[in-house]
Image: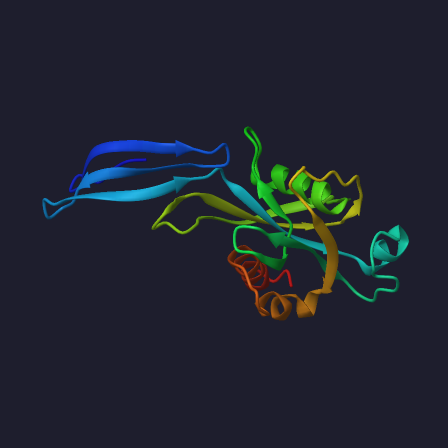
Length: 195
């Protein structure tokens, strides 16, 4: 990270490390000469997966509540978020591990969370999240050609896998409680013609 010439970095301090993210502040001299602390949380990059699955694949797997399915659907997970004390309907997502690309992380996370592995992935967008307080990048990956894989949840993941018809996905994601990663990923996928 670089600081523009009109700003001067006086101090960068990490105040705590959680194993999940680091938190601290930068003390900067602003262009007007005043000093100010800018607090931040530094998180690893994450990926959100817009995964399209053929209804026939769902029927053949017997792996969910979708006994008879017409047309393509998107995979979602429903999970309780202790931080905000709400249960959310979300797209599969997770942290990008060291050395992984966004598409590699998407493939791994999708299989771990849902039990389906894509045969094709495409990075739709990479962007910075909540730049006023976070040092955190996110990638949105479109995945299709899903095949049955092996589900392997982390010890803090308690997820219910569900599907939503492609043409209803954006409307469902906008129903409260809505969340940023699911909405932004679906809007990007829709804009790029994948929904």
